[in-house]
Length: 284
Length: 174
Ligand SMILES: Cc1cc2nc3c(=O)[nH]c(=O)nc-3n(C[C@H](O)[C@H](O)[C@H](O)COP(=O)(O)OP(=O)(O)OC[C@H]3O[C@@H](n4cnc5c(N)ncnc54)[C@H](O)[C@@H]3O)c2cc1C
Ligand code: FES
Ligand code: FES
Image (spheres, each protein chain N blue to C red):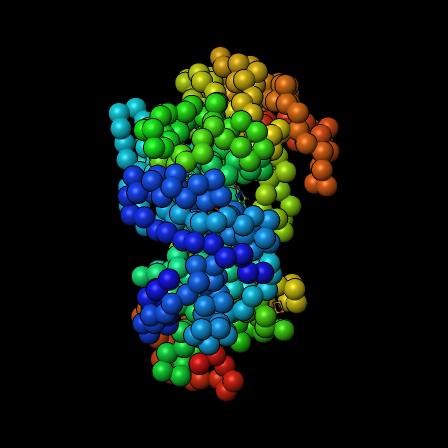
C-alpha cells in the first residue's frame, strides 16, 4: 500500500533536526532507517503530518572511543555494527546481536538509534544495550541529557524520550576482552524474537568474574536477569554451574502470551536460552 | 520534492511526492518494471535493489531518501547483451519457476557474493533469508548462487561481472 501524504525535510545537523521536530508539532515523526516506520506507514497504521529524515545528518553516524566508553551514533546501521572493528573489540555483544536482526537488506538500512527509540519488546538491540549499561544521549530544544538504558525503556514501544527529543548517540561502557553471545529463538520465516538472551561475561582463571544477562520479549521492556548474573559470579565456567544459574532466568518476568508462545513456554525458553547463551559465550 | 538519482548508470532528476516509495518511483516513473512488489509487509524481498552498492528492499525506502544516491536494479546487470553471471547461473540451474521472486533473489545474491565470494550452503541460505520464494523450495536457488560463486571466483566486483563469451539469452533480462 501507499502511505498517506506527509511533508518531508532532511536536515543536515542535529540542531536543525531538533528545531524541525519541535516546530512541526506532535504529529511529526523522525525517520531513521525507516525499517520499522515505513511498514507501519504502508499499512496506514500511522499517518504523521511530517517526517524529519536523519539520513543526511553526518554527526549521527560513526563509532568512536571516549575513554572507557564507545560512542555509537544513532544512525549507525545494523550492518555497520556487524562489521565495525571497535565494536568487535569493545562491545562484541552488540555486533553479535546486530547479526541476528532481521535480514541483510533490513540490516543495511535499519539503525541502532531507530531500534532503541522504537522499543519493540521483540526488537533485539534493546536487551544488549541494557545488559551493557548503555547510556542514551538525547537532545531536545532544552539541551542534551543522558538517560541510562535501565530508565530508557518504559513500556511497549515507549521510551523516556520526550516529545521533540532525538536520540543522538549511545555511550556503551567497554567490555574489552569479555566473551559474549546472543541466543535468539524465532520462527524461520519471521525474524522477530519469540524470546532471546543477550549475555556477556568476563572469565578469569576459569571462573566467571563478571556477568551481564538481559532478556528480549520477556515483558513490555527488555529485562535484566540480575539473579542469573549474581548466581554466575564466582562460579566455574562449567555447563552445570551455568545451567544452575540459568534456572533463575524467568524470575520476576511477566512475559506475554500470544500466538507465538504462551507465558509459561516463554519462561521455559528464557531458562534454556540463558544457559545456551552463557555456555556459548564462555565456550563451555 | 526534487530528487536526483542515478539508476542503472543514468542520472534522473524528478519531482516526487515525499510518500512515494522507491519501488514505485522505479516502476512507474522510470519504467523499471523488472523490480517487483511482492508484499505489503517488507518481508518478501522481491523488490530488492542496490542503493549505493548495498541491497535494500525498495518498498521500504522512500524515493526522497534515495536523493543523491546510486541505484542498481535487475535491469542494470546485463553488460553488452551478456547476462550477469548470477542471472546466468539462475537460468542454468533452473533456479526459478514463476520468476516473481527472481529479480530480488538475484540482487540479494550479488550482495551476498560481494560480502562473501565463496559462501557454503548455510551462508547462502542465511544471506537470502530476507527473500521468500513460493515455488522452488530454494534448493536450486542455493545451487545457482554457489555455481555463480564458482564462476565469479574473484568476487562480485565490476570486473567479475564481465564474463567473456557468455551469450545473451533470448528473452533474458537486458
Ligand atoms: C522484515 C523485517 C524484519 C525485521 N526483523 C527484526 C528483528 O528480527 N529484530 C529487530 O530487532 N528488528 C527487526 N526489524 C526492525 C529493524 O531492526 C528496524 O531497523 C528497527 O526496528 C528500527 O530502526 P530504523 O532505523 O529502521 O528506524 P525507523 O523505522 O526509521 O524508526 C522507528 C521509530 O523510531 C523513531 N526514531 C528513529 N530514530 C530515532 C532517533 N534517533 N531519535 C528519536 N526517535 C527515533 C522513529 O520516529 C520511529 O518511531 C525488522 C524489520 C523488517 C522490515
Ligand atoms: S515488496 Fe518489498 S519486501 Fe515485499
Ligand atoms: S519462482 Fe515463484 S516465487 Fe520464486
